[in-house]
Length: 231
Length: 231
DNA sequence: CCGGCGCTATTTGTATACAGAGACGCTCGA
DNA sequence: TCGAGCGTCTCTGTATACAAATAGCGCCGG
Image (tube, rainbow over all chains, first blue to last red; front, side):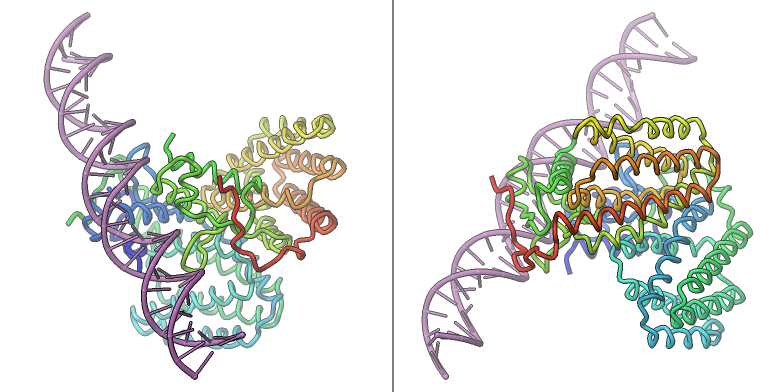
């Protein structure tokens, strides 16, 4: 694996997991020393992060981890909803019923996963990712895929703003099962509608649960130069 | 301006204008020599092109200009339609009537532009870009903006597949005027519908006019290593 | 005491040298 | 004559040295 790939994966993981918080400065020498690579591959990694929307150039000098707030989550979903609905509609038309039938069954039985602690929740999220993958493959549209990649990455970051509870996850599993069944039946309109309902509920959950546990409005605006992960 | 920016702009322009045809190899030493920059900024330019979907790594070694065919145009529009419809819907809600009123007038009077030869057509496309910009600003959604940037870039490339004729451009101007009026009136549903109609007509025109004048199926598939712009 | 100008130090941008990996071609054997 | 294997050679990946620019800070003048 190339050094630039390792640097990219490492930084990406750090940002998604909030080990590098929004606003953190990604200085080239500092990060290259921390990750044990030279500045050249590190710069390539930073370019990729910028293209992906996880980092942004900071007024002439430096690169900072992009902010992600509940205010932006609404913007995120405003784009995600039409794209995901388009994706499942296309997937329903292309017809790969066996795959989605199996996925529907697994979502219908996902309650046990959700009750199995944190590792179970991670496995549930992996199942969701499997459905996304299957939809992408069935839709078979490279432009759609690329547009969704970045949005989904941001979404993983957002999850930290509001820890999902079991009730919401159980409801989410049901919604996903519904989507899978609609795709399986080749009903694009229904799949799209089910996806819209699901994303609406997800957004509602994020917005309400988020403001309870973590009020981003309280975040100080000035210290854009929060430094993290020095050593 | 940085050398990497110049290299990026230059390569991007070369690709969009078909001076660098799909399938062309972008060898680092060759291109850095041609553009008069070192390999380091050139590599950064290539990264950006890859992120933008204008180039792609080629099986382990080398970077090639991505293909763009009428088959892919359909995929392109399958994503563009929901995104542009979402954008104009948001723009209609945000209400910046003065801007869109003026744009609507200019589109209504765009017939003279279209009849004014190639430079007039270029000015018409610039007007379309102005409307796009106004919509983006009114929508005020960074994620939507980023997703559309790449798609619109590809669209400019596609225009070469089917040279627009005056009838189509005149109809297009009318459709754009309709969109602007709907946004101006704050009618999101109508704006979205008008956009959908417009994009449907655009796609139809591309597909029919394209197959008449330039049959991509005749393109040889083997010589992926077409070298261009050596000296 | 406040504001502007200039210096310095740090950080980014660029060039180049070197190393490693992969592809092409040549040769040898069947 | 064709295929496989090895060697070479070119091209990419990485590191480092150097240059340029910007931001912060201090000093000087009003």
